[in-house]
Amino acid sequence: MPKKHPYFSNLLISWYLEHKRELPWRSTQDPYRIWLSEIMLQQTRVDQGLPYYERFVEAFPTVFELANAPESKVLKLWQGLGYYSRARNLHHTARYIVKEFQGAFPDTYEALRALKGVGDYTASAIASICFERPTAVVDGNVYRVLARCFGIDSPINSSKGAKQFKELAQQLIDPLQPGTFNQAIMEFGARYCVPSNPDCAHCILGHRCVAYQKHQVGQLPVKLPKTNIKTHHFHFLVCLSEGGKTLLEQRKSKGIWQNLYQFPLLESESPITIEALKAMPSFKGLTGGWEVISMTQYNDTPIIHRLSHKHLHTTFWILETKTLPQHAIPFHEVRQYPVPILLWNFISGFGPFQP
Image (cartoon, rainbow, N blue to C red; front, top):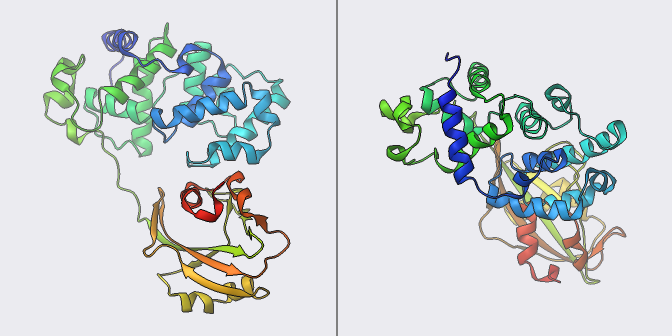
């Protein structure tokens, strides 16, 4: 394992200072805004996350506004970014920082790492960028740069690999400019040492890149295959009463959609006909007190919504009824509730819910 490579950090920092993108969180060392951007950019591209960041900062300029906001508003602004536990943890941590630290973020890696929803990567980013702590970040972009440059074939999603890459990144970081170095290596991975067809012939590190010299760029980094992805069959019942109302329910059980809203949901182990759906005890239990006028299938084939650990094969069923229970809401209010992007796409294209 190499001990020091000053050329590596110097080249990356020089490249970064000349080629970096001008992004709003790069013009500040405010830990609140750095924290917000880092949480948002987990599993999210910069071009996708940027408008969300701008809306969040406008709605919640400081950690105090975020802490005081209702969770439903936070989830609504987050809608479409996915991985909703990030939003729930963001809100929880904002309240904790206001209550326990009077709104001031802790300034050490260890204290930041102890915050809910803050892992090694986010703690290292905040500590280095805001407080000049020499703690190296390791994300997908960093894995790719290090694996190729140093010819490391340890799987990045193994405990051995994670430890190895973290130790190497820590050895490479510039202790005098830790925040700049961390941003430089992430930017280089995101914009130059890209996953497919990087321009290795003109790379500033090409003359020292092991993967380039050994024609292994396409093979690195190594990642262990995912476990089997399960398939779930979802059936959302979109109820429409003659009085212009519908039903939404809040998901209380733990999971990625916790505390978001949805139409009444039934699940089956396989695709199902309308007759079989109506025969389900859960369907009868839900609609037993209503007078259902008609029931039709909205989408001819299931909509496949791919999550990291499962695929949702989704069908929307339109139920027209005489009346609905008292907790039913007017059609136009549906758009005010935080819902999974799968449902939002349906709501955005369904006539009765248009403003």
